[in-house]
Every structure is written in structure tokens, then in C-alpha cells.
Length: 120
Image (cartoon, rainbow, N blue to C red; front, side, top):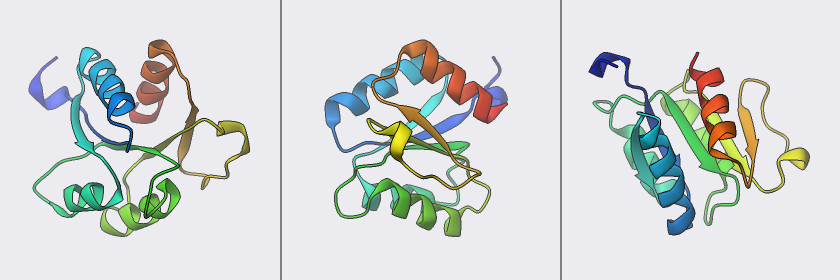
């Protein structure tokens, strides 16, 4: 894969162990990964226009600002940014039609397939 083909994913997860596991899996799948431990850090990254981001994957249950509020803010900064919510309650959460959801816990294969289907 050439460097130009590498997609960058911003992972927003307040649980350090869960975040580390997701990052490890995505890096293993040859994605470039940026990490944020919550909404504030994620928004700082999103405001950095020199930083290319192809997808934001966020936990729904974040402290301060939940994942849906973060997604709304993210879309004001980057209107075309694809968003993937990770939730233990995937069946019961409402997400905007152009956003995606994956249920926790998910397998490596499920995560890979979901991310690839979003990024095309």
C-alpha cells in the first residue's frame, strides 16, 4: 500500500485499554490512527486543518460531550467526515442517516469490514 492509499482514522475512546485495542487492530489493518481520550482532545485534532482525517470512530458514552454531540461538532468543522459510533447499545441508539454504528464488543473482522465499507 503506498502512503497515499493509507486512510487516517481518529479514534475517540475514554477507556485507555479499549482505545489501545482498537488502535492496535486498526494499525494492524494498515490504517494510520490518531487517538483522543475524549471530546476536547478530538475537537483539537479536528480543528487542525493540516491533519487529514478519513474517518472518526467514537464511543457514544463519552464524559463531558457524548459521541453524538461530538459528531455534530465534528461535522461543523469537517462537513464530509464519515463517523462511526461504537456502542454497547448499538441496537438502541439513533444515529443520523449518513453516520454508522458498530456494536461493542466487536471482532477484528467486524471492525475491518465496517471500516472498509465506510471508506470504500
